[in-house]
Image 1 (tube, rainbow, N blue to C red):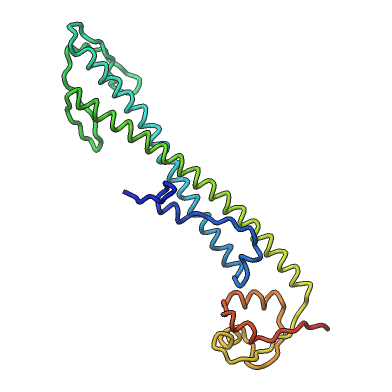
Image 2: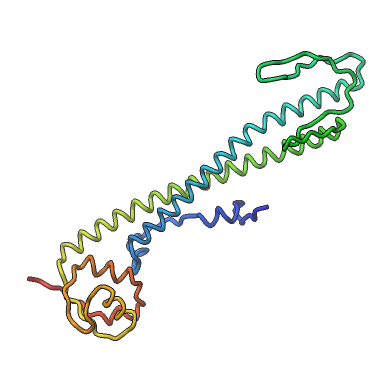
Length: 240
């Protein structure tokens, strides 16, 4: 049985909870925007998959619920007629849309399908108890599924809003960086993080290079330099 958190949802669902980002710029500080957007897109894909699974489970439960209720009603009817000398007329379904009438006198047992091609004979009180329990469990499961679907839908909406705001932030950020033009970058430290970054992007160690502002910001965020290394890159605006 899946563990439940304090809010009643399975732990697997709670892990998919998407935080609402109020300050996008603050949330993106020191992060690679493309990587964060990709992470949220992956979370969105998982949420949609879980939503589909919950929907399928909900359909199965809603199909099963009236069947259990119908079987329970028949058992209760047979119990009410058990001590009567008057025979009970019932309609048996032979195939879809095909029924046959029969009479039952003083029924004491009933056969119930348990699934997997298994049928078991129960006495009427036992059958009523079993069906009542199954009906109660089915209603409880249906309620839980509906609550989980609401939870997932809320997080899907939050994720969609978050992705849209991130895209808008990225577009505005790149526009501002483009207006600033190219800049001068000078490596002033032999930090391994910075050295590897400049090596990967073909910037000679210790030399001043011109790089587009947007590219530099993206690369710095992408390599996730420690804050202690930020001050070791000398950056000054460049104008023609």
